[in-house]
Amino acid sequence: MMLSCKEVSRLVSQGLDRRLGVLERLRLRLHLAICDGCTNFSKQMAFLRKALSRLADHQSKT
Amino acid sequence: MEDFRSRVEGERPYLLRYASLQLRDPHAAEDAVQDTLVAALAGEAGFAGRSNLRTWLTGILKHKIVDAIRRSSREATLAPAEGDTSELDAMFDASGHWIDAPGAWADPDALLEQKHFFAALEACLARLPQKIAQAFMMREHLGLDTAEICKELAITPTHCWVLLYRARMALRECLEKDWFGR
Image (cartoon, rainbow over all chains, first blue to last red; front, top):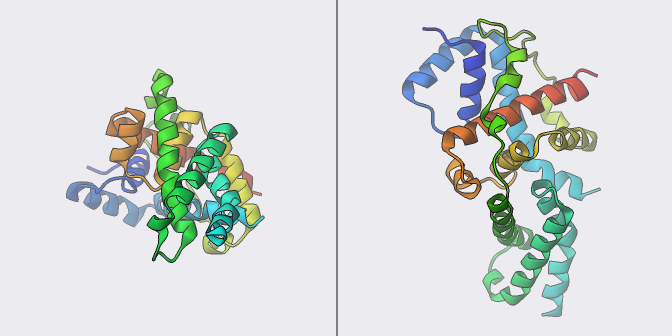
């Protein structure tokens, strides 16, 4: 069964916090392959993590 | 010896900023930094041979911050609404499709060089509800794993994932509106 975008957004987030199961990863990949919105969302989540890791360094220069 | 003391003191502004990002209470942040500096000066030997003073001090500070979180979460009770994701219902239709599908964010890597972007990000972080921000910053700023966060906040992993999910959804929406949508 196909995951909805809502379920995908939840799984993408959890994928940043735990190792997803084989089936979860497979279903996620199937959905992302055909959904631009969720693909963008997934990239944005990865970007958020990167930005947060630099937050302390950045503002200390001001 | 004097040199070490002044180098440690020189890191105070960075450490204060680091602590303030996690602890919203400026006094708690100040206390955590003070404890860190005292511990660092008493434990200079522990630094011997390490190359990066800031990294070493930040490692000590993380423990002090977690201590502060542990003390304050013992006092606070969890509001029942925090496990609830109903605010996200407005983003999806009844079948779970995006109502407003995320578009691509232009050249995000270049943003990481821009001070203004980080100011916008901080403004968005400040708007997150306390408990959600706390869990999210423990994860992304302190770099703790879910198990540690659950332990310190006395919540289940499922609850923890919900808090992190809500934080990310809210931040994404806030940045989309305040930064990318300008």
